[in-house]
Each structure stands twice: as structure tokens, then as C-alpha cells.
Image (cartoon, rainbow, N blue to C red):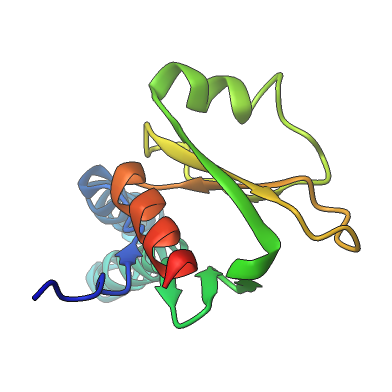
Amino acid sequence: MQLSAAPYEERLTAPRSWWLISFLVGVAMALVLLPFGTLPMLGGLAGGTAVAAVAASSYGSVRIRVVGDALIAGEAKIPLAALGEAEILDAEETRAWRTHKADPRAFMLLRAYIPTALRVEVTDPEDPTPYLYLSTREPERLAEALRATKSA
């Protein structure tokens, strides 16, 4: 007995280096406030680090999910019936589709720090969006989840 394909879920987290940058923003704020004393300097360190960390976390909290009969990518929820073929993009094709091959009407869940992506055609004639561009670390798994869920 084969189990049905589990729904796909991926969180596009910010890279580890962004957390170091968040701390460095806090250090910069501390240095700016250093002439005002130790307490403002510590407040600048804590506040600057916290604000930068919240920004990095919110940018990196986007999710891609295949749930039921829909693909949920960030704030968008697209029924699987409106989707066509999925094309797995390697690093070179990913770069091409987010630059010179990109269509301004496309839905792009773009994270430049992720080297691979999945391009999914939109087959709904009433939708002006030609395709979805989804940055993903596991494009093969996402494409397989879309195929398996559509066929089920």
C-alpha cells in the first residue's frame, strides 16, 4: 500500500549571514549613540539589532505550500486546476527568468539568495498572469507535489 503524497511545505528563511548583518546594524547604532553615554549606546545596540532582526525575519518568513487543491505561495492562493506544467530551473535558468526573460505580469515569489526556482504555467484563460516564478531550495520536490496533488 502506497501512501498519498504528503502536502509540500517550505519556508524560505533568510540566510545565516543576514543575522550577522543584523548584529552589525546594532553595533553601528551603538557607535552612533556612543557620544551620548553608555546607556544610550546599549539601547542602540539592542534596538538596532532587534529592528534589523525583525526585518530579516519577516522577509524570510514566506512559505510555499501545496495544501488540498491549492498552491499557497506567500499571500497568493492559486487553485491547482489553474496551473499547467512546472519547469524546474537550475541556477543559470533561475537567473535568466528573474532578469531578461521575466514577464512583468508574472507572479514572482523571488528570493535572490536562493539559487534554484520553479516556473509554473498558469492555464486559466481569465488570469492575465502567464506564469508563477517560485524561488525554492527543492524545486524537484515542489514539482512532484504539484503533479501528485493534481492527479489525485
